[in-house]
Length: 278
Image (cartoon, rainbow, N blue to C red; front, side, top):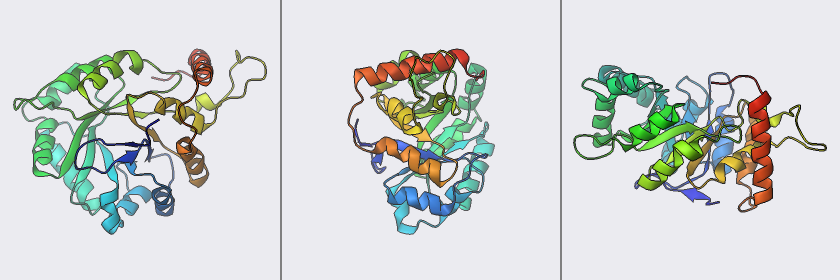
């Protein structure tokens, strides 16, 4: 597995494991600094004031060493301008490296975003000014998202610079619906839900004798084993989970075929038996 990935010229290369915050998890500013000192360089903020936003605001010159990403809920140009201004002000930043349109789940929604007065219009303007690095999109709709990744703006540049897609051992559809497209056009993919809300860490009724469920680090290693995954996001709740997740970056090289087959088989069992998940 490649240890560093370049998402775009002008952004620092980053290890392929990123750290994200969510509204229902806790990472302190000290936890973020711990991750930074351990080599993590891709940080995805949930958009609510927390330890990550405080850390970003206080990084000083170290800000240039990381890629700072957040999801943007805006759907109109005016909303996007206001939201991006708030993000920059709150984190005391002069730019946002990655802004992903949050959970776009229908073509009608995308057409409104990409149409006149839609949020893409404002984000493209901020991208041209240097206040925004990459325009991305987060979606569970794999086929639609892959199609949107192909769309060109009037100036010929693709509207989207990256995708954020669910991918884990229980949900491997991106291998069929997304990765062939993004790999062909050179669009980086950041993955989320690597643990399937921790279901992959639990046993199932169909486990073979002597089987032990994988660790969180194993689940992220599975994601990182696919060359089309630029960054796999982990969203630990506290220092202990953060330390466990970061073990995914510890040496070991490419996982073997037997190990990958066992992870896929476990993922299939989890998909059959775990709670329903959209």
